[in-house]
Amino acid sequence: MNQKLFLEFVNPIKDKIYRLSLRLLVSKDAAEDATQEVMIRLWNMKDKLEDYRSPQALAMTITKNYCFDQLKAKKNNNLRIIHSNYEDGNKTSLQKEIEAKDELLKVKEIIKNLTEQEQMLIQLRDIEQLEYEEMVEITQMNPTAIRVALSRARKKIRKEILKKHNYGIA
Amino acid sequence: MELHKIASLLEKYLEAETTVKEEKLLKDYFSSAHVDSSLEQYRPLFQFFATEKEIVLTEEEKVIRLPRKQNKKKLLVTLSSIAAIVILALSVFQFSNFQKDHRVVEGNHELAMKNTQDLLNMVTGAVANSKENLMYLKEIQQTKNKLITK
Image (tube, rainbow over all chains, first blue to last red; front, top):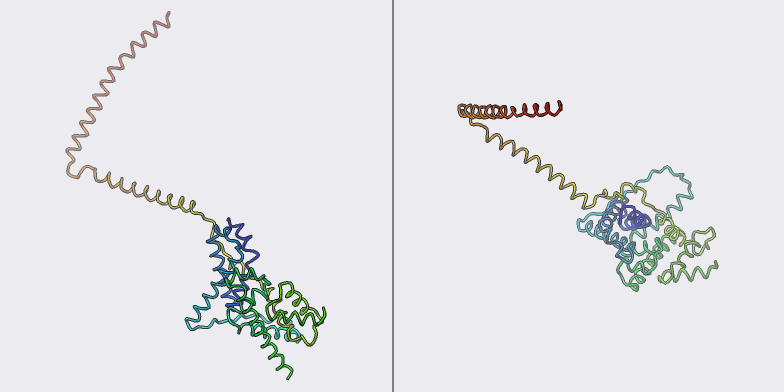
């Protein structure tokens, strides 16, 4: 596989890799580093990529493993990943937009408090809209376990949303 | 879409029994303008999923930096040419040292003089010898004259 073919292979999945890293590692810098690391690993095994049934799933698996390793390392060091994604506040600050954004931020917060595995499943299923077969390949979990965990995650989210929603009314 | 359909899809969704297609229906419904007020609380969730999918890698140049195209063959060629240059340099160096070692040792000038004189004598001897041989050229001239006068 030469450089051109490699770029063609990487192009459709690079954003997915980045989004999954961002979901798990939270910080943009960490996610960019993770994406770069995954790219390097893929490049180093570029001649073997064609032997895999689904190179895309392999790329996602590498991403997942790398991010989990990073999280584990951070935990062992007793450090928390610092996430400060500063954004310039030049956007039009219409009240409605703020409210809408605020609601989305709440959802983001809720998802962030899920376990890493649940976050990953939500990312793969609800955001990337992957089929269960693909998820099985990426996560190396069995399909039933995926469904059970995903259902639990979704119910957790609903519980938190309802809690926040009811507070809003009261 | 009717409300009860959406509600039952939501139940299925929570049990993780929906297909990707059905989840897309839910997403479309919640991103539309007319979400039923009883389901309003789910709107941000599905909107969040949609916006999250929009995130793209912006610092692409920084992140996707491929190693320069350099296969093993090229590396081997580079390495061997470096090795060749080193060997060449070393051998020139060694050779110049070698020559230095075999120069006439200082204080042996007499011997050197004698050797040189011998050599020059040999050269003069050889020149004298060859000079005699040059006499034969006259013969050639005579023969040539004979041929031409004919």
